[in-house]
Amino acid sequence: RLAPPRIRAEDMEDRLHFEPRGPQIERAALLERILGGTETIVVIEAPAGMGKSTLLGQLARLHGWPIDSGADLPPADGARPLLWDIPTDVDLVRLPEAWLRGAAKIVLAQRPEVRIAGLERAIVYGRACVIGAGDLLFQLDELATHFPRARARRVLEATGGWPVLLPLARRDGPDGGALQGLLENELLAPMATDAFVELGEAMAGREPGPDSDARLVPL
Image (cartoon, rainbow, N blue to C red; front, side, top):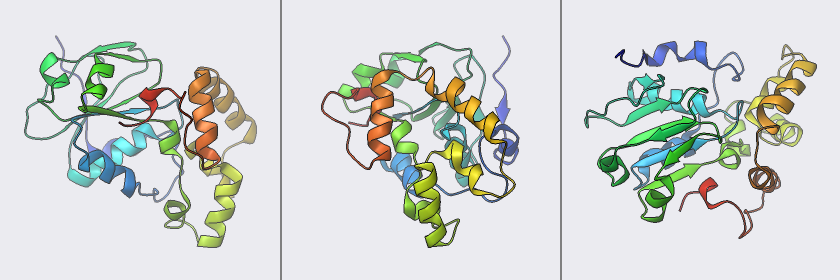
């Protein structure tokens, strides 16, 4: 059985298809949330273009940790958190029962259609949380580390904080038609109605309502 490939932190640039060229916008608050929380399982769950792999790559570069990206469940050695960028052809993940009980720290990046068996139970017991699409929207203070503050405000108003739209803030950004196709086919089409509503609430700066899907926010 072949071991899943490991990607060095310095090679991550080749995998981040939706991040603008040049310096990345550091997601310091999200990185602190991932590492500082008591949950041992952190799931970064969002459609394509929302910055899942970028966030995972920043975590890897910050600490020099490798990222597993194979379809098979990677091993955990206990010496460091396990980072797993789940490929798009995987639709069901079965974590070891010991992991669900908090025996290993694991950070997963996945699309919403991936199901993790036992995740809801781990959330209920405080051992897991989900960082959803709404959490991945850029905030003004984050954009202001990359742009002058006045321009950062204009970028936020124009993009709603969507990572996939940030290349439009560059004069040499991608073709608008291609970006529209990406949004329609890769991001919006597979998104569940409740997740779409939550994303809209987050863009408007409002908290999700009581009927929002509990898997999309940490407990």
